[in-house]
Amino acid sequence: MINIIWAALIIIGFGVGIVTGELDAVTNAAIENAKSAVELAIGLIGVMSLWLGIMKIAEDSGLIRGISRILKPVMVILFPDVPAEHPAMGAMIMNISANILGLGNAATPFGLKAMEELQNLNRHKDTATNAMVTFLAINTSSVTLIPASTIAILSAAGSTNPTEIIGPTIIATTISTAAAIIAAKFLQRLPRYEIKRVNGRQGRDIRCSLK
Image: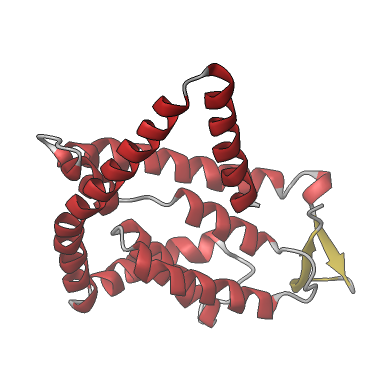
């Protein structure tokens, strides 16, 4: 679908250029922006390498595991349907810990593993559980202490103080994560999304009636 959208935008752009007699301007703009994209990408290499190196050191030094131990009591409260020692809980904790440090590349495998393990707990494979929905909301809005990618882009774009984004990012992502959790917990209590009992039991015999 995204390829179709991009193709349509390109065709429309050239079409408008032909109709308005500004085809040369459209062509020149495409060439100039392609040049700018390459320059920006090259400028990102150095800064991204530095931050990814720092984050890798943090990962290997056990900093992520330290954050994981801090998060575990909170995660048990947020995900009451997931056993504390289940692999799904460990994968979710590691994913969120990596996202907090801006380690998107390291967080992705943990996120996929978490969803796989949560699906193993799900007795209704065609329906997302409350735990899956809540985890996805947190993963999408994730609190971030060090926005490495944003810092790198600002630096490559010539910002004189690219790290000034850290404070606003912490505040914004904290608020967004709180909003995501509140929304997930509130919506799952509504009749449309309420937890249904199966065989008179709860726990792992539950499903969220998302439609």
